[in-house]
Image (cartoon, rainbow, N blue to C red; front, side):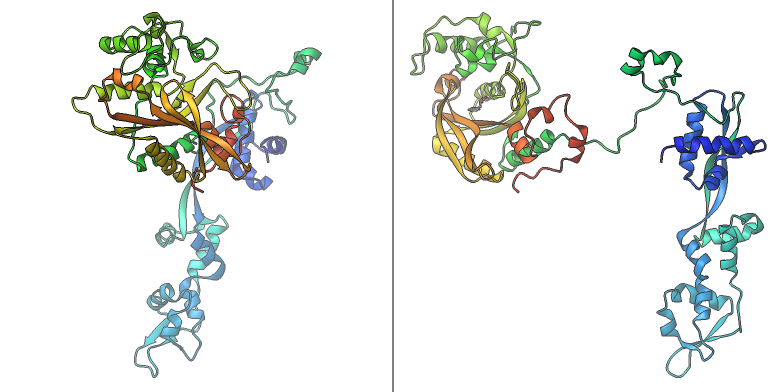
Length: 497
Ligand code: PHE
C-alpha cells in the first residue's frame, strides 16, 4: 500500500482533531502500519504549509514473545500449580511438562507447592494452597492493554528482568494543521512528460520541487557481474593447476609488444585501422629495449635463427604506434621477454584473464571489447603433445571432455590449433579456443635459450559465460542495455556441472 492512500484519511482526522494528532495514534485509528503514516506526513510536508509535523520520541513498554505467551496462558509457575492435582504429582513427571523446570522453582518460592522427597515411589509435589492469583499474568495483561502506568516501577523492572517486558523507543510525529491546511490536496507532478509539453497542460500543473538532498537507495550488498563470476572460476582452475597470474593492467599497448614482438608483419591485415583501435594522444610509445628491438627488426626484415624472415622494410614508426591491445598475448610477450632476461632460465606457467579491444562491426555476439583467457607454459622440450595434454586437463576441469583439434594459422605460433568441443545441447562441435607453440622467431630474439619451447592457448570469457547463463545476445551481458536484475539474479558459477 502506498502512503498516498493514507493522505486523505489523515487530513480528515486532522480536520476534526482538537489541536493535533500523534502519528502512532493515527496508525492505530486507521489500522495501518505506522511507516505508512510517516510516509504520508513526509509527502504532505513536501507540499508546503498544509500540515506541520514535529518529531517526538517516547518510550513504550512492549511484551516480548514470551511475555505475550504468558499473558495468554498464564505464568510458568501458575501453569505448574494448575497441573498438580490434590493427590500430588511425581516430581519427575512435573519436570517433563513444558513449563516444569522454570515454573517449579518459582512456585516453590511463592510457597504454592511443596516437595516431599521421601514419598513412596520417589519425590512428589503437593499443593500448599487451595488457589492462587497469577499476578505476573495480570500485570502483563495490563501492559498489553497499554496500561503500564498503573504498574509500579519495581514491577516493570522485575518483568523486564525476566525478559517478559521490553522498553522500546518509538519515534512518532505530532501533526498539526498548517497555514494552508485543506482536506483535499492536489497531487504534485513528479515528471514533466512529452504529453504535458505538447498539450500545454504543464501550465496548470503543480510540480514537486527536486530534492537534491535525497540519497539513493542503498543496495543490501554488491553483486558480481556474471563475467566476473565466471572469471573467478577460471582463475581458480589455473591456480589449481599451478599457474601464476600475469599483470594485465594496461589496456594501452604499443604495436611493438602487441604485434612485432609476436612476429606479426607490419602489413598484416589485423594491424589495419579496421581491426585495431589506434590512439591519437599519445599516438606513439618511445621506450623499448634497444637490443631486443634491433633483433626483432632483423628477424622481420632479414630473418635469422634459421628463418628467412618476411624480407620487408621494418619501420620503428609502425611499431611505436599506440593501440588498445587486441589480445592478451601482448602481455604474455612482455612476460616471456622478462623471463628471458633472468640469468638462468626457470620453467613457468602463466595465465591472464582481462579485456582486449577490436574494431569489430557490432552484432549479437561481437562487441568492440571482450575478455580473453590465456594460458602460457614455458619449459625445455615441450611438444604439441604437451599442449594437447594440458588442454585436455584444462577443459576437463571446465566439464568439457570431448575435444578435437584443427590445424590453424597464427603469425606467432607454429603449429597452431583451433580447439573444438562437442556441445551436447547444440549437438555439434563448436570452437572453444585457439592455441599453438610459439615460433622460434618470437622466442629466440627475446633471448630465451634454444630448446625452450612455449605452448599457449586462448579463449574468450564471454562465450562460456553466455552459454552458462543462457544469454543469446551479448548486449544483454555487456553495455547499457544490461538489466541489473539479471546481474542480481545470476547464480554463483560452477563450471564443472
Ligand atoms: N592471441 C590469440 C587470439 O587472440 C589466442 C592465442 C593465444 C593463440 C595463445 C595461440 C596462443 O585469438
